[in-house]
Image 1 (cartoon, rainbow, N blue to C red):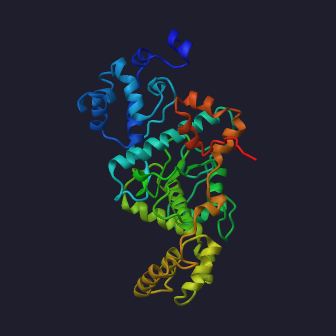
Image 2: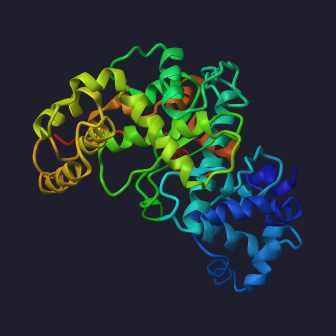
Image 3: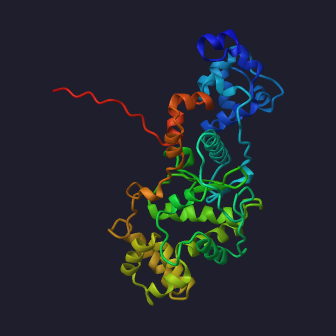
Length: 377
């Protein structure tokens, strides 16, 4: 430990220069959604110099490091080598809306996932999290085999998890109970086109469910089941194939609304009010139920098309309007925040260990700052 670090609790720019981790620079820049050119302008250097910093062929001068930390809104110690780092390539994550997601958005989402894993790792050193019980996940502690076809895999997983044949309640909490880390970040303009993404290449499977333009618990649940399908079916395959997206959709539909159970409850002809009632029971959107009716041969393509048009007209009406996620605690992740409570750590202590800012640590934990309330009589 340098004298500067001992006296101030923070490393000196010279110490950070000597132990500079180029991967941390890339991660911090991706988290801001900024380009190398933008960062170069903040530092007064060339984009080529920033590329050299990130490749590790050169290091920022000590006098540049405080400006670098300030521009990327991280503590100076963030750039020190030696902390556990999840190296996740964007090509190893499944994105539900890949076509509408730009490269910098994918990079930001991946950097966020890396931090979610780092937070999980720090907490798991102190708190035993649920065992990973996920067929198809290479790092799982439990390894049952599942069929390769989406619908069969969905039915087998329901059976393995003891879900019965009815609606799946508290889906996100169930994912967490089986060792899957689920994170719902705060609303972010850069991530608004990203419905969800997941990865199974880290020591624990991670699903990130981003708030999109519509705050709707039914879309949120389907996204979670869709990503679960990727984790089960596509753990060892390269993401990005449109066939994988169709398979994940088929898995989600069967997992949330098993054909044998939902079939007898669906109307034999188009009845949107009936489908609205089933929406509340099964926790899936009316759009999804219309699609299910078409799959089961209860609706023709033309009838389904008319149904979608009518649903667009009814989208603000009770029973058809989006249902906000805030009213469904069981669909909101709590694994990391509860592990933090059990860890005995304070937010500043955890932030110091991770080399994050205190606000960033609170943000990823989902822990709000509680300030005393001044009341005047």
